[in-house]
Figure (cartoon, rainbow, N blue to C red):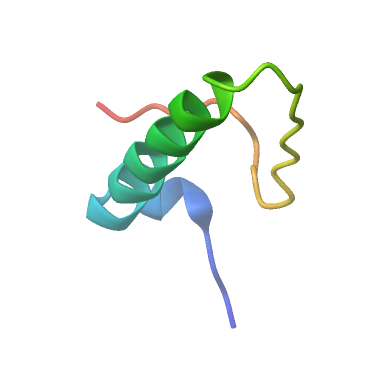
Length: 50
């Protein structure tokens, strides 16, 4: 399988994933207990979406 994340970055599924993660982090931040998040599929980290 030839998967290029740069081609898919910013599509509807990627945007939905980040929406869900941001809501989850907001809920976790309400608690006083610390939390950690490790993104094992982060890719390069910077993509030109224009």
